[in-house]
Image (cartoon, rainbow, N blue to C red):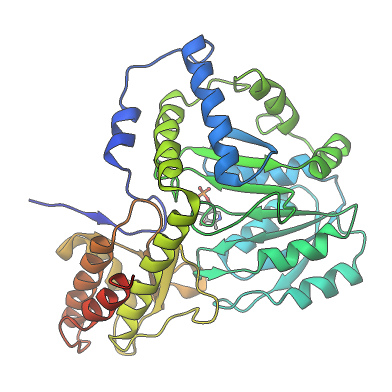
Length: 380
Ligand SMILES: Cc1ncc(COP(=O)(O)O)c(C=O)c1O
């Protein structure tokens, strides 16, 4: 028998009640029963995003909402500041460049959070920059960026918006959209929302809507204004991903029942348990100073073939983890703890990791990671 525990930073495990909702018989996306679901989901998304702004829903992976943010907000030749501290920061730059937007890059060392002072300097050097793009959680390095501090810099500027990729941030840790004055916040379904991939979301502030009204970049499917008009009537502009939205209703119900403060506290505890567990094996974190509560990036120890870790742990021990991307390929592996993950899942992942590392010639004291993780998990 083969059973796999999914500890990848997206897709993440889908709870049983959400799976049941996903498998219900098809209904029509323009009929009243579906409109009622969309109305409920729209309200609950505002709870998740902590906003009174519209939260738009698209049938796409998260990158669709990222692309939509660029193509709806900006004009050809505009300047935008992009925080680049990993693969997804690079994606903001690539999307901007694809649309003819001039990028002012604020680099961060991979594994470190951006220093808000660097963003401040970029804003002072380029006061005409129309937007600042960054990640709340840079999944490729497992770093959490200081969104609140960057948002404060942007809020003071009437003609600049902040756009946050919260694809592995929302529902993971506190990102109060309205309280922090975040203009566009995007996320995707396959992370803390505990759904299969396929839905992308974007919340849009009044300041952002004003900028959208002046945007001249080409757009069609990801047309925020068109989508807003339709969603006011509890419709999506084009055929809705009916099953995913029915699943979303169930997932948001779970999130509301747990409550955001409890959800954030649980995820943080799982993250800490994972970090303490791997450290007890003598392993080093890639991002010890600003670790994301979504996933933990662990450096591959000397003498171990890092590229073998994800396949061996999956095929032999039934735990799916992620390797490193781009320049971190073979150098790190990543364990997720967002969404439908329990303390016992973290423990199982660590046990499998111990066995995998031992197979690859790294000496571990059996159970050391489990003891360290349990010490965190049993804290009141
Ligand atoms: C922080 C971040 N941004 C963007 C993306 C891209 O999202 P998608 O693969 O859903 O398009 C991901 C996916 O892992 C992510 O973690």
